[in-house]
Image (tube, rainbow, N blue to C red):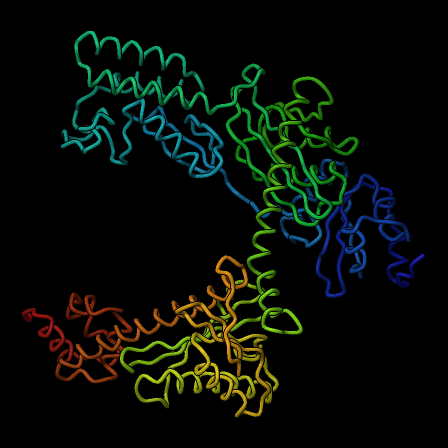
Length: 618
C-alpha cells in the first residue's frame, strides 16, 4: 500500500457511509477533481488503494495532496451538487464542456400585431412560440430564408401598426413582404399567412405544398405566367428542404439521442435532436482525456453539465449506456428541472437502439474527422517545424522561431518587425516592433544589424537583472527576409554581443530559396512541402506586421504635419488633440467646447483649430 501520510490516512479512515461529493486537491490546494458517490467511504477509499487505474485516474491520483467531502441526503442531491461544484471549480480532471453554447431558437410572438420571426438564445415562458434548438446561426439563417422564400413575412423591427401608412421597403416590391407598414394587408390576412408559417416550422410541409400548387394553377389559368413560375420555384425550395430532413418512424417524438466514441485518448459525444418526429440536426462535443474511461461514466458526466444549462429538455433522452442506477437518478433530476415528465433510457434493441447506433456512427465520424484535422494541423505546425529543423541541420526541433523584416518608404519611417511562432503557430503576444534609430536612408543590412543587436541586448539585460521580460525567451531558430547578405549582418549583430548565434536562415522571396550562413548554394524545397510553407508563413507574417505598423506611422506623421499648419498648436497640443479625438476628421468636426476641454488647450487655441477646419466662430 502507498503511504499517504498520517493526516490523509486519518481522513481516509474516518470516511462516512453516506452519499455526497468529494473534492480532490493538489499540493497548491487547487481542486483538481470533483466526484459524487452513493457511499463516500467505498468510493473515495478506492482511489487510495494500490490497484490498477485508468490512465486519467492514475494521473489524477499522482497529484492528490488532500481531499474534502460534502455530505448529502440523497443521490439526486449529490448529483446536483457535483454539477454545481464542477461549474464553479472547473477541475482539470473532470469532464468539461468546452463547447458551452446557448443554441439559437426561432421565436414568434403571435400576440403581437403582425408578428415576425426573431432569433433568440433563451426560451422564456412568455406565451410565444419557440422552434429549435438549431445548431448554430447558419442553420437559423437557412430556416429563415426558407420561410421567407415561401411566405412574405416582414423582417423589419418597426412598431406596427403605424400611426399612418409609410412608404414600403424594397422587400414589398419584390414580393417578400406583405407591407403591413403601408397598410397593404390586414391583421387577419397577415395572421392567415402566419398560420402557414407555424405549420411550416412544425414540419407540415404538405399543406404548404397544396396551397402553393393551388396558387400556381390559379396564376397559370389567369395567364400570369411569371407569378406561376415564381410559385413553382417556391415549391421546389420546399421540396428541397423536405429532402434535407431525415424522417423518423417514431410518431411526433421529442427526443435527444446521445452516444459516445472513444479512441483511447479522447472522447467525442454526439447528440441528435428529434422534434416532431423529425431529426432537426445534431452537434458533437470533444472531451479531452476521456478516451479510456468507461463510456457510461463519460456520458453521465456529459449529461449533467449539458442539461444544467439547456434551454430545452426533451420528453425523452435515449442514451447509449449509463452506469447502473444512473438513468433513474438523471431522470429524477431532469424532471425536477423541466417541471414535467422526462424519461431516460438506454435501449438495447428495436428502432430506438437503431437510432442510438446512428448517433454513435455520427460520433465516430466526428472523432475520426477531428483526429484527421488534428493530424493535418500537426503536420503543418509542429511537424513542419521539426522537418525544417532537420533540413537546416539542427540537433533538435525549433520550439520558438522568430522572423524579421524591415519596412520603410525611401528610407523614411524605417521600422523592423519581429514575429514569433511557437510550435509552428503564431504567438501574437510575442510580436515586437523596433523603430530604427541609427540608420540613415534605406539600408536594410544596417537596419537588421541594429534590430538583432537591440533584441539580444534586451535579453542580456533582463537576464542580468534576474527578471522574465519581453525578450527573455530566446529563439531556437531565426528567419531573415532576404538572402546571404542580410543573413550575414543579422548573425554579426549577435556575435558582436559575445553570444553564440542560434540557428539562422534567410528566405529569398524571388525563388523561395533557403540560405544558410556561409553557404555557397541555397537549399531549394518543393513548394508543396509543409516545412517550406511554414517558413513562408513566418516570412509573410513578418512582412504583414511590419507594413501595418509602418503605414500607421506614416498616417500619424501626416496628421502631425497637417496640424502643424495651425498657429499656436505645438507638439504637446498636437499630441493631446490626437489622443482625445483619434483622427483628423474628428478634430475637424469637434465643437469649440470639446476642443477647449482637451488637456493643454484654451479658448484661443480652440478657436484657431476651429478656423483651420474652415468654420466661422459662432
